[in-house]
Image 1: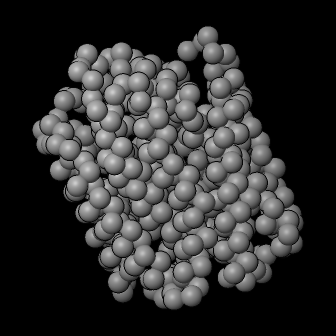
Image 2: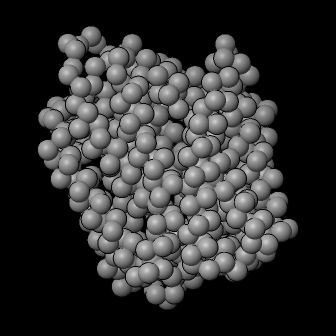
Length: 405
C-alpha cells in the first residue's frame, strides 16, 4: 500500500507547480480518515444485515441487495462527474457537503419504511462516496508537506482497513441485539462526529485544478488502462457477488447463529486487514502476481464453498481466507493503474474508483438474481465464474515486469 501511495504521490508532485512548504495539518488528515471509515462502514452495512432488512421491508433478499447496487452505481458516476461540477467551489465546502450527505443517508436508512426510501438513502450515500474518493488524495496533499504525503495517505487509508475489520461484524452484532435499524443509527452518529471534526479541522481550499472529460477519454485509448479496468470489473464484481450475499450463505447453508455469523464476519475483516499487507509485499515485486494470487485463492475458496459450504468450520475458514485474498486486489490494481498512466495519476485514479463501483453494482445485481433463483450458493457461483475470467485476463495481458508499462 505504501509503495503505491508513494508512486502516486511522486507522479502527482512532479506534475504540480512548486509551492511553499505546508505545515502539516494532522487533525485534518485524521478527519479524512474518519470520513473514509464512515463511508466504507455505511457502504457495506447491508451485507451483514441483509436478511433482517428484507424481512422488515417485505422484499426478497435479492431486492435488498440492490441497496448496495444503488450506492455503487451512483458512486461510479459521482467519482467522474463531481470534480467537474464542483471545480469552482472551495474543496472544504464540497467535503463538508458530502459529509452532510452521509449523515442524511444513514438517518434515512435507519428510518426507512419502504424499499423506495431505502434506495434514496443509498443514492445519497453513493454521491458522498464517489465524490469523497475523487478528491481525498488531492486534499491530503494540500494539508501536509510534500515529503509527508505518503504518511498522510497511509493514515487516511487506515479508515478502510478498520472499517473492513469492524463494519460487518459490528453491524451483525448490533443488528442482532437491537434490530438492523440500530446499526444505521450508530453509523449516523459516527458520520455526525466526522462532520463536526472536519468543520474545525479542514482549512479553506480554493480550487486549483481544472479537470476535464478530454483527459479521461485520452486515458481510455491506452490498452493497459482498458485492460486493468476490465480486470477490475470482472474480479471485483465476483468478490461482491459473494460478499453482498454472505449473510444468506452463513444462515441458510452453514446454519450459523447470529453470534457465529458476527464471528465469521470478523474473521473476514481480519483476513482482509492482513491481506492488505500480503498484497503489498507481493505487489512490490509484481502487481500482476498480487492480483493473480488473490484471484486464484478466491477461485479455490468458491469451489470449496460450493461443495462443502454446509460444513460450518469449512465455511468459517473459507470466509476468513476470502477476506485475505481480497486484500491483495486494491494494492495490485492501484500499482497497475499508476504504471499504466504515470502522467495522469489523479484522472486514472478516478477511473479506477468508477470501475470499482461499477463492479460492486454489477456483482450485487448478478448475485441477487442468482441468489433469488438458485439459493444462497448463487453468489459464490457467480464469483467463481467472473473471478476465473478476470484471473485469466491478468495472466494473459497483465504487466510482466517493473520495467514495462
